[in-house]
Amino acid sequence: QVQLVESGGGLVQPGGSLRLSCKVSRNIILSTFLSYDMGWYRQAPEKQRELVANLASGGTRNYADAVNGRFTISRDNVKRTVDLQMNSLKPEDTAVYYCKVLDRSGREFWGQGTQVTVSS
Image (cartoon, rainbow, N blue to C red; front, side, top):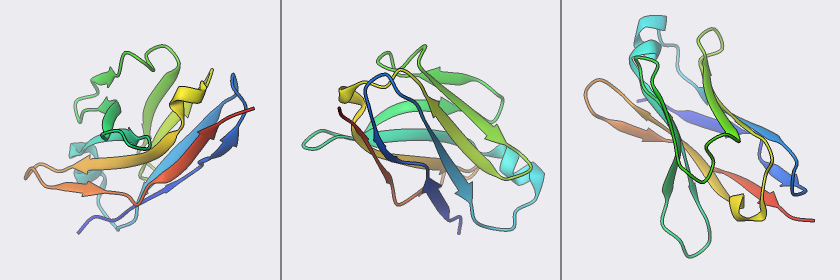
C-alpha cells in the first residue's frame, strides 16, 4: 500500500505562487519510485476532479491547458516526492489539490488533498 501525503496548500493573492509537495510515505526503493506515473489533480466546489499535471515514469509531462505555462510538475527522487510549482495563480485555480500515483500494476493511490485558495 502506497500512502501519499500532500503539503504546501494555503491562501495566496492573485498573481502569487505556491509549491505543493506530495511525499510517498513508504520505504520504497528508487527503481520502484521511478516506475510510478505521478500526477496532480484538483477539484473545485461543485465541479468534477480534473487533471492538472502528469509526470509519466518515462519523464513525459502533460499539463491542462488552463495551467500550461504557469505550473510545473517535478519529482525529487531522493526525497520521494512529486511537486507542483504554481505561479501566476488566479482565483479560478482555487480548489482542493490531490496527488495520484499509478503503479506498474495499474493500481491508483490518492492523497488526502490540500486546499489552495487564491483570493485578494
